[in-house]
Image (tube, rainbow, N blue to C red; front, top):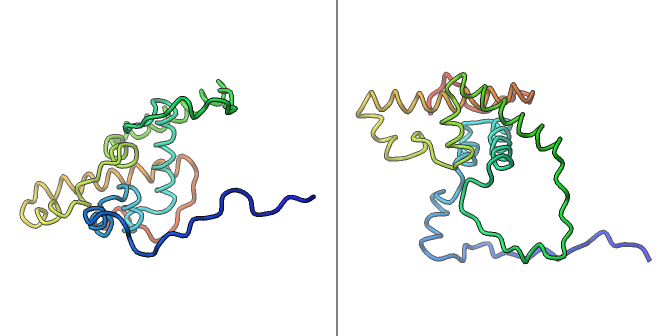
Length: 178
């Protein structure tokens, strides 16, 4: 008897309309529930490779320090499951990779803005509508926001070249403004 190619639970057909609460529907429609790094990719501020670098940095951070957000796990979920044993050489290689990335970002003063975007999911000021309106009024705020923007782009580009990912066209360059 041969195995079938369709395994597991069949996909659930989801309704095309949003069935959440009115507040959640409003937040989804305005992109409030999207992660900050995903929003940067959607707005074409960063490239797909830079997006991958941000997520990879978050993954390395999670391996080193644990999840940066609140989560809970029921220990009973793992009862009877086989958990892969920890490989110390693999883990030390990943921790060294994270340390190299952090050292490079700190050397260019890019760690704080990249970490707040990619690891801690904090929206940069250039994605906030209130700050964009304030840009027209205050030149010092404009300079601070543009500096944050340039440091994020520079940091993700630095990670991209460090991890030897190819450059693609389509993302906003550092000379362009958000």
